[in-house]
Amino acid sequence: MANPVVVTEQTFEQQVEKSSIPVLVDFWADWCMPCKMIAPIIDELAEEYDGRIAFTKVDVDSEQNIAVKFGIRSIPTLLVFKDGNPVDQIVGALPKAALRQRLDDAIS
Image 1: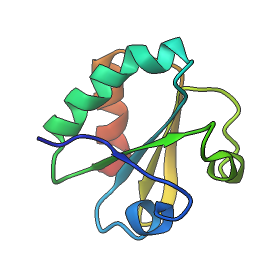
Image 2 (image 1 turned 90 degrees about the vertical axis):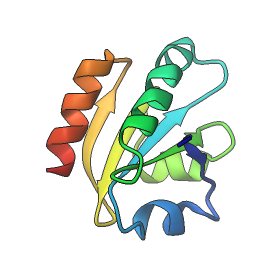
Image 3 (image 1 turned 180 degrees about the vertical axis):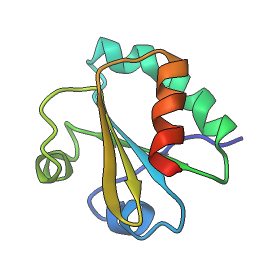
Image 4 (image 1 turned 135 degrees about the horizontal axis):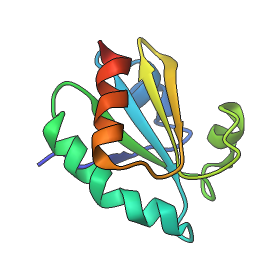
């Protein structure tokens, strides 16, 4: 079962920027209701894309330096990385079909 991996400032470079496959980074916080709404969708997509896209999570309260580095101003924000660079940014809670389309576009 593929679950999003929690990344920290210490693991971000290895898990995200040096990944051999595209990576979705979910910037979230425990107090964020829209973040909690999309969490099950992210989990489902992680299962569907297992092996093709890595799914990670960054708690913006614990990892403020990462959030600042990528200019995260509201959550949930999803960044899709390909070859170590962000190639798409999704702000807010989108339906599963819309997220799937954005992922497909970003990794094609």
